[in-house]
Length: 164
Image 1 (cartoon, rainbow, N blue to C red):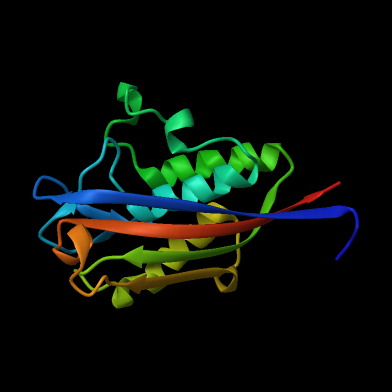
Image 2 (image 1 turned 180 degrees about the vertical axis):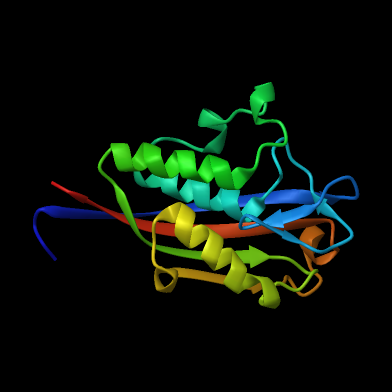
């Protein structure tokens, strides 16, 4: 490791309840399903977890610090657009993402057929190669509110570097 380069990793976690009133958006793509995620923005739990992990790298706080649900301009906003703003914020502080690992936690719908498209969208927004993004999905095997299909969550870990 170069002594002039500093690395950090940070984690983000987000969960949202499912509702009949919205479309399901995860990782910036719309997924066909009978329910969507409730939230002030589009409720994209995966992108929200990624945003929190990236903000954590630069010790900037969390998504609510910059995009509070008390501000009407963020109502129904696409989270993927907020992600682009966050990447610019941390880049302006000298941090550059090198890797993203994320897991979607959902009982239903199954995510396997959507992961590739999520990686494509995230690759362009995060300024990363597709091979530097890992997105997986798991269930809770019927446990908790996710297992009862009442919500979906996500965990993300981002790694970034800064030249000193």
